[in-house]
Image (cartoon, rainbow, N blue to C red; front, side, top):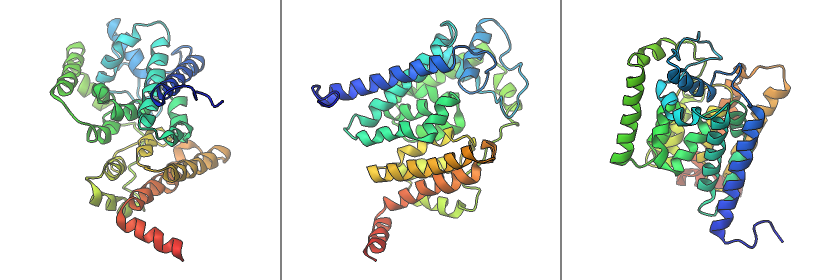
Length: 311
C-alpha cells in the first residue's frame, strides 16, 4: 500500500508538509549545532538579536564579501527565537518555514511542485541557511509578510505578488519602528556596511534584452516574478534564485528548470571554478530557462512550440 494511501487528500498533504518540516528542522540542528564562527545569512540576525538583548552593537563586525550585514529588522523578527538556546530557534525557523512551503506548494494537489526541494537553489539555501525558502513560503502564507523586511533585495518580488491588508502593513510598520527603538541609527550603519556585497544583476547581461521582454506580461504572476528578480541584485551561490521556482506551471516546466539548474550547479561543483564565478552559469542555465518558461506560458510561445514540434 502506498505511503499515506489511507489518508484523505488534505491530511496527506499536511503529513507530507509536517514530515518535510521535521526533517529539515532536524537536519538544520545537525548541520549547525552552534553559531560559532558563523555570522552570515540567517546566523547574522540571530547573533544580532542576542547582541541587542546584551546591549552590544550588532554592526561592530567588519563587513566583507562573506559577512554582509542585514537590516536590523531581521534581528527584530527573529528576536523571540533568538532567546532559545544555541541554534534551536534557527532549526525551528528553517524547518517550520520549509514545512509551510511544502504545504503551500501542494495544497492544490500539485505534488510535482515538491521538486522545489530537489533544486540546487533549495539545497544551497539549506547549506548556507538563507532567507529564500522563507520568502517563498510567504507567497503562500502572506500572514508572515513582515518577514520580508529582513532582506529587501529579495522581498520586492514577493511583496508585489501577495495581497496586503491594513494589519499586514501595520505589522511591517511596527517591526520597523521597533528596530528604530532598539537602535535609531541602524539604517545609516547598515548602508555604510553594504558596499562589500558581491552580487550581480541578471538583467545587466547579454540576456538583458530578452529578460526585459517579460515585462510585457507584467500582469501575469510568473512574468512579474521573473522580471522583478532579474532587476534585483543577488548572490552567486544559487540560493537567491529559489523564487524562480514559482514560475513553472506544469510538471514539464518544473523539470526543465530543475534539470538545467543542476547542470549549472554540477558543472561548477566538479570543476575548478569557484561559486563566486557562477554568475554566467546561473544566467544561462537558470535565468534563461526560466525566461523561456515565461514565454512558453504565453499564447505566442505556445504557438511557436507547436510549430517547432510539428517540424
